[in-house]
Length: 391
Ligand SMILES: NC(=O)c1ccc[n+]([C@@H]2O[C@H](COP(=O)([O-])OP(=O)(O)OC[C@H]3O[C@@H](n4cnc5c(N)ncnc54)[C@H](O)[C@@H]3O)[C@@H](O)[C@H]2O)c1
Image 1 (cartoon, rainbow, N blue to C red):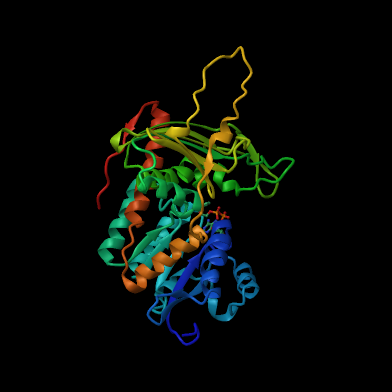
Image 2 (cartoon, rainbow, N blue to C red):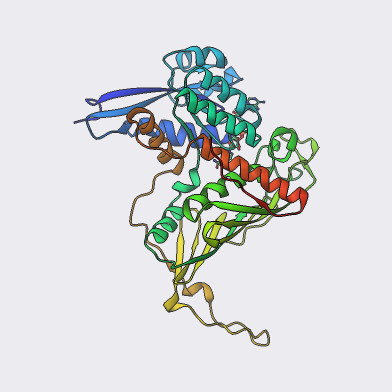
């Protein structure tokens, strides 16, 4: 059957925040429009899910320009009136990629309007708000999902494959390095929006990255049972989009140690003030009794117990062994799609076909909880337990 002959199950999605970095590139272009370009989500039974985006935001001219650029009719697919869009019964899903501070109120309204919810992380600025959203959405009987894109990256999918195949034996530890240099904005423009560096605007690397580390650790290795973090602001003054100096009131580096169920120790450094001397912008080294792996966004290298070299500490002699040469690349063995798109497709199937979906607002609340506890651990200078969340 050709795609055109298939029964189209139209799903209308109000997309709020599509002029932003994530909303535009990853969610609109690389996910929803890419799904339309491939002919929809093929359900394999003669039906396809056909997403129809409605671009919602504050600046009409910017939204109209986006619509025109991508062949959408600006008269019918653009709105600056969120309340009116939510009151429209033909809208199935509310999606949020706004700045974090604006999220909770908008999702709250969308739940009240009976829409299914799909959202960027963090889902709220505090645990209470995040849990409240999860409870309200569940009580309202709407479907809900939170972006957990790192789980769908090729490097981490290969890592998961190694774990599932028993490659590591007993996993001992996880070491993560995430970060890159974000320019201060004085002599080269910053490559991230300035709100990221102002706590009062919902910024900070802990609230940005700990939600990611929570689901990566939880899904691959085990529940995070405790957190100890040291956070800091290495660069106290930056320049904004207009070139004006501002005080960076949010943390730009977070050094975290996480104890996981089963005794695994994870240590993850997150920093916007580090220069990259790695193969990828994030890398996780996993050491187990039978073997080790280093996974990045795309690639994953392994070293098995049987081929592990035996270095001897002797600072008097130059190092002759090329340790990195002793690692082996894990093959793709599959085609990997864009991680955001892959997760969108699963969420759309969840909405239309009721397929199971575990990355919901409660999972999102766990990420907010870890960020909140990480910041508290840093300010109190002590390790904190991470209580298990329930609705
Ligand atoms: N999943 C990921 O890997 C990932 C990566 C980066 C950011 N994010 C999350 O995505 C969200 C957006 O981040 P971004 O980097 O795209 O930011 P951005 O500043 O590029 O975009 C923010 C969007 O929100 C809109 N906006 C700005 N101020 C607003 C306000 N006061 N009220 C309502 N809307 C406002 C903007 O017009 C824009 O559309 C954040 O919550 C961030 O945590 C996720």
